[in-house]
Length: 164
Image (tube, rainbow, N blue to C red; front, side, top):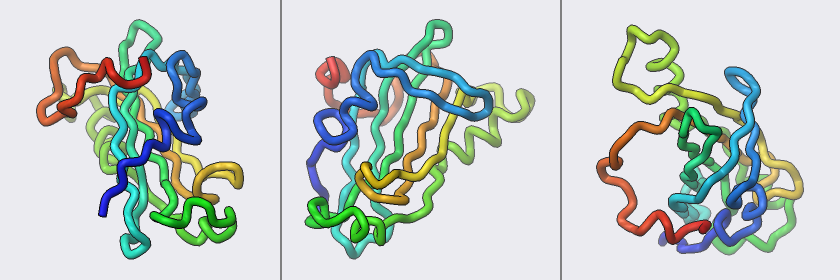
């Protein structure tokens, strides 16, 4: 069963990813990004039978230029374990590298590889601390170049309704 909770837009990570918050990525070079608005939040919290737990949040960011997009992959606690001690939730921690990061690194490393792939502008892979949702859980930020047009198969909700 899938949860409908908010962990980022109205949850415990809200201040880190709210409008006008500054997010820093360290790779390939240190950069700071200012969040303009949260486009959507996808909640992938599941029961403890599912090994991989996580959450993705897509936000539009800048400086201008370039307009960019960011996705935050954040491990969230298994359903019904949210109020347990940090050390207990830490047992749920898994390693995770999003496919989009793997592929953007490959496809944008050499311009001759793909002229149609958005450029990877920054990323950061880190582990959550004791004050976060899952001690040792994944917390990955991926920033890529914004391309004109509307994404195919994107969210059907009005992006302006989030984080404004």
